[in-house]
Length: 270
Image (tube, rainbow, N blue to C red; front, side, top):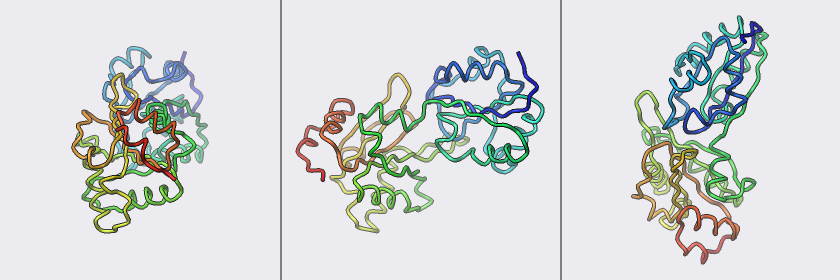
């Protein structure tokens, strides 16, 4: 049953395929007048848009970064002014701040907004790795090396000083089918280390690489940087975690779930 009440509902799709959406999210789509979806903020490896359209009996319109950022989401807002509009977003809609401007703009012109949450990379990383959620500090994105940004290095350093873990999201350019790999991210951070020489990213630094979180076959590998540089993580999407102070149970979890070397047990984490 369609509703003509103007509304913009942000629905999280989860991480891997069309089955990651919640039942509540699916029901929201079924009662929508218009459904939009973006695919540029994260890659969903096994997502099938035609299958989702069949499940919800709705046509889904793909939205580009240009539509949202350069045109201020005009197409979505216009649709929401005439009826219930769904905006499908990978993961959980506002874990990243990409779409907050659209929600603010909708509220400013009198369009009510709601959020139907989905599984995010933040919760998936914690569940997969066994690292404690309350010990994560600020999250940062590692960009492609041509940007020469030192922010990721600085954030990792700041978190480490506080004993906190750092989740690094790795850059992607969906239209170009280009994804920063874990190996490239490590090399980028090593280059910054050579410049700053603060012993934040050394050969003996422990890190955890995660590929395809949310899929049936994710890859997790924790090890020293010297052993991760050439490790094959397979297909994207990718994430990289730099642990801070590790509890002994976290070390046990990394050994059990992420194939970390037994040597981690002999390390002293303050």
